[in-house]
Image 1 (cartoon, rainbow, N blue to C red):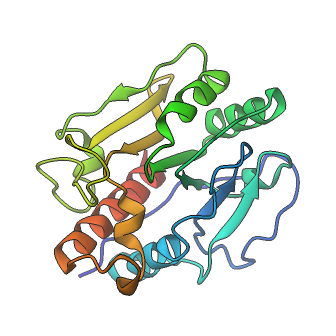
Image 2: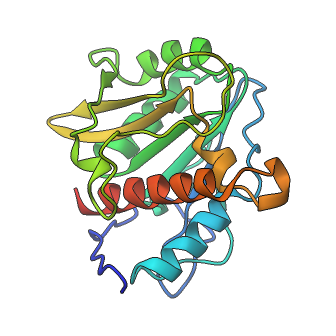
Length: 219
């Protein structure tokens, strides 16, 4: 049985982009500045869209999009991801464009592969100097949209010790950004032969990704 999802209508604010003409949902990957490997998890978002196609009524594209903050193409996508291991930086102009995108209705999922955190937090302060990341409990609705995840964010890969952590950034009461830390959900969404994760880990990652997308499109 598929879940019916009725996403909000996300209208482009400015600019043009290469988007599916038939309105299919597309995960957009953010090509950020700073030299970090923004291109990591090469198969993750296509697999997530395939999962959404199979398990929900959301009609998804067959390939991801890539956007930057140096142009206005980000405004055509309601859901953007940011991933990698290394440095993330935003210029003043990029920070302002990302802020405008998020305030205008967009949603950003940041998935730290390992090593991004120390760079990410200062970068986000350039976008929202007035807001801090807020730790999300397992009872937060994002863990209960499609799948019931009573323990909250699952641990996919053991990069360093400790429990996985979920954070949200809120603006005027709406979560505009979700940050998954110390787990690496994207690795669990990769093709099976990339990390050779057990099926249980891959399923946990898929359920998490579907919950995040569904929450973003319905809140």
